Image (cartoon, rainbow, N blue to C red):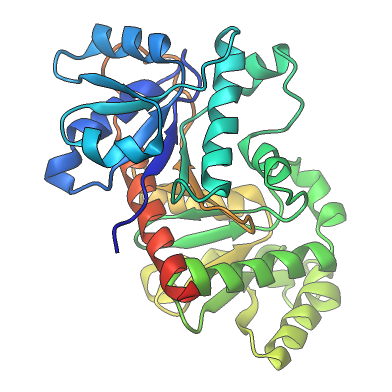
Length: 327
């Protein structure tokens, strides 16, 4: 079965999104990348690509049906064709990519980074890509963030909140949703028939029987036991300081962590250049590079496409697993 094309959004034009998409296209043959189209304003993309590369021809397409035909000889670009400045064009690219994925014209979305403050100044009201995609797909409150590389998958139960607020915001309901969503998507989108999930503790040494915090005894451990009875393969709560060395990682398929840095520090230490941000819990597949717009190097031609390439490859693998599980 031929995989439907993938949709890559151009991201913030002032960042490195267009550059790394063009570099990924240049490596299409050596890496056997699946066909993708870049979605965004053609003139913005053409101007930036021309200034950086001599060997990346642009092919403006009118339909995703043209991607497979164009991809071998040119970078296919699908233009939302709207009026407006760069912020409006950035949002329009996300809108169109989501629409194409929901309609089944594309297999997945790979979003390149956005600069949220620039979008906020233009009236964007969402914390970021994830929340916006959840709204566009009719899935508010269901999205769960996973960071993944070849050696590790981590899922933070809370994300961009102050550390001092984690204990108040981390509820049993929130943690249960994160664990169930992780379990389900590991099955349907990663092809893991019986996922093994490690659950980290919140406190040092997982609370050490209550001497360093009560959240493990009062909430995390009872939830883990209840879900184990239902058949979810869980271990925990486990001390986070011993959860991520090589031997420990061999014992689980994903680790659910209690807060942002508990999850992101180990994966960025293990594979800083090829980490992928995956959104679980949506009716579409969405991945993105695990880095920002990198304004400081934008336009210099030195941005590395490795994380975007990993995001493209992972999106294709997830799409294939989804097709297999649905058949």
